[in-house]
Length: 157
Image (cartoon, rainbow, N blue to C red; front, side, top):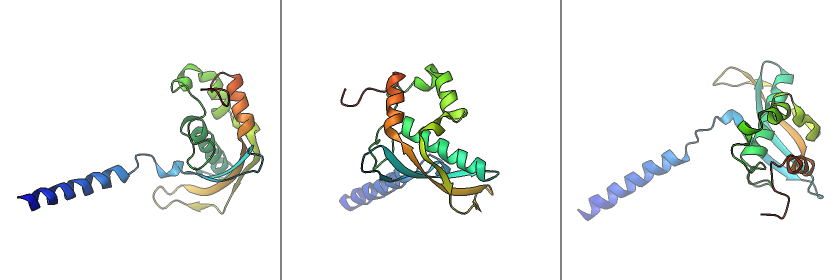
């Protein structure tokens, strides 16, 4: 009986662990931190972008980077937590985020715009895809978010 209980517990733990490891996020939203400049203002990141042509792929990857920084945070970077403090800000400040994300206002915070590696086809979706590397001026982005009252000032809780 004791062995059966332990075996049942082990099987249950293994199943639970395999379910917990699966991500519900689409892998196309993958954003990866690379490095930060010595001054701490520029963050180099890469993201996988999808689209019909190279321009669309770059725009998709750049938008994914900013959505990650603003609403999720980026592991391993100085922006590990979302830059936007209010989880409802996307709904309450629709006009601001429309300009920033939909109308590519985020491009003013790119020190080095997106540079794609070779464009290929995703085996799952058949879409054109590329890994795009860029540098984001996170200090200027944070200052603008502070000015818009979307984040707290550095050092304040």
